[in-house]
Structure formats: structure tokens, C-alpha cells
Image 1 (cartoon, rainbow, N blue to C red):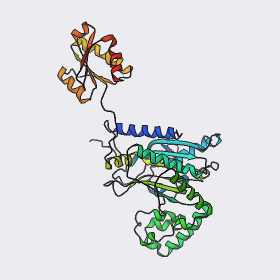
Image 2 (cartoon, rainbow, N blue to C red):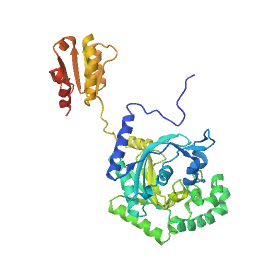
Image 3 (cartoon, rainbow, N blue to C red):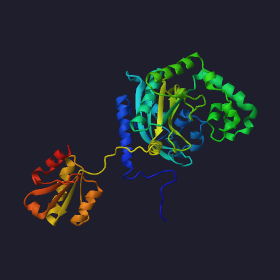
Image 4 (cartoon, rainbow, N blue to C red):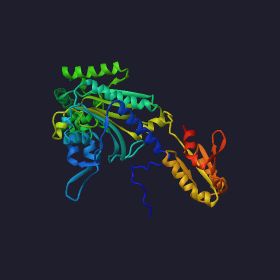
Length: 423
């Protein structure tokens, strides 16, 4: 009986993994420019962290988490998202005491959600995310948005749409909450059981319901923008002003909610408008989460961040027919003829590799012609041919595969010769 890969997961094979590496390198480069430092948190945490941080009423906590009991009887959950774990680390490691604030962090790694697998969505997926913790300044919101938009554009994506909303502060949200309850309550029996359960606990979640999104009451639901107090209005206007100053186009959508409970004030999504990308167009989501630090036992530490799926990003690149500039092939392939030459190739290839040259040789006793074919398949820039006769004379023939030019080089200068040619 064969064992297949679990549903909702994937193998990332050579030939494709190079795209992932390129994207991850681009992420690190832009984070360095914006002065965000990498953080790595565990792939599993105490379940209570996500219940408190993400929210008991969210689909993530209620339906999608991989939760199990360890041998000590503790409830453990594979991380479904990155923000709660980063804020937990911020609190636990007392980063709030660092004199340089805000603390600006990024992460990349696997997340786990039990969802129905579909194009670009997996049960194990990889996120790149950014968190800026310790500032209430709306300019940090604009900075985070600039980072993600510039990241996408640096990879060649053009058909992007940034959508914004404000969820307001606690006062604004409570006023909006009461309006939502009054709006939905008379006909709540027409909605799914989840929405009915959330009416009193968290009516904002109703607006994020996938089952009832086409219900007529959704279209006429009270807008949060009508319930923002003066502080929340001014904050949102500042964010928009900064984005305009940065020449970043955006749209305001009062129905944008986001699926996690910790969001307040700025909420946003980046969407792909590429033809054929699919019904679900969201590439990235994020927002401000003032209060999350306090929810998990830390001091007041307002924050903002985003997370994006690498799988969705790759799908968007494909939809826009963007070819990443992945360097293909190797630098040098050593072809041998004769047993002594074959033995010598072991140290020759090793010397090339240790000097930084990507090199390869034959390991299957192939004929010379087959070795040349192997070098061609690997797109070798140079092919070095060593026979027993050349070995006796301490020389090796090096061929430039692009120009066809060939030169005899002494074995003692072979490595430095190849390195110089590659410059």
C-alpha cells in the first residue's frame, strides 16, 4: 500500500523551490530596507493564545485549527497565523523595554488551517508577515502598506488593488455593534447558525460570513464609517493622507472586515485584478491590533501588520505571466575520459565548489558524449574535459558553451581560470 501526501499539502520540488527562494530573498531585502528584523516563533503554541488573540468567535478558532493534547495533558495548536505568536514573543521577551520603538519584525514560515483545499489555498501554507509593535502613529500604518505594495511590485505584479477600511476604536466599535444587532436581529433566523450565534457575541463577524454574503441585509448593513468618533475619523484620514503622499493608490470599502477579532482602526487587503486569477482575489490582509498585547497579558503596545500567502503570490505571478529571473544551470561541468582522469575529477570538482563555483561531474560511468549531454541539460556555462593524456601533461581543456571557444589550461591554474571567466 502506497502512502500519499496528506490532503491540503504539497511537495515543493527542485525547479519550483528556486522561485520560493527568490521570493523569500526579495522579502528579506525589502525588510532590510524598511528596517524590519526577522523573528522565528514555534510552529505550535498553547491553544489559549489563539483563543484569546484571534478570537473565540472566528472561523479560525471554531473550525480551522489543528489542536491536540500533548503527553502532559496540555492543549496545543499548530499556529494558524503569525501575529498572535509574534506578540506573545514581544511580551514574553520584554521587547517593550527596548529603547528603540516601535519594534519592527518580519517572519516567514508554515501555518496550518483545516480548510477546504482549492487553488492557491492549502492546509499547510507559507506566510510572509510583518509586525510593527509599539506605536500609535498613523504613519507606521502607511509604512507597512508601502512595504507590502513595493514588495509585490518588485516581483513584477502590476494588477493590484489596495482596499482600506477603518474599524475604529473601542467606542466606535461598540456603537457600530449595537447598530448591527438592531439591523440583523429581526431577521436573524434567515441566516446560518454561525451568524445566529454571533449576533450577540460578535455581530461584526456576520459581515464576514461566506454563506450569507449575498443576503439583502448584508447590502444595507450599517457602515462602520458612520459610527467613527472624532479620533478614529482623524486617524483614518491621516492614513489616507500619508498613502496619497506616498503615491500609493487605494480604495475605501466600508464592508471590509477581516476574519480575526484583534483588528481595530486600519484594516486592509491587497487584491489581484489579473484576469483568470480566480473568484477569491485576496493576496494579502492585515491591519492594526491595538489591545492584543494586553489580551495576552502584556503592557499596552499598539501594533499593525500584515500576512501574505506565498502560494497565492505564486498564483498571481502566473496569472500575470510574470517570469521570475531565476538563475538556471551550473558554472562548470567536468567531463572525464579514463580511470585516472575520473579519479582526479573528484578533487577538481571539490576545489571548484570550495572556491564558490557551482560544479558537477558524472557519477554513472557515462560515455563522453553522454557526459556532454548531461552538461547541456544542466545548462553548464563551461565544460572542462580531462582525459588520461591531459592528466599526464597536467592540463585540462575548458570550453565556453555559449561561444564555443576552447582553451587548454594548466591544472594548477584551472580553478582560478574558471573563476576569472565567470566574473
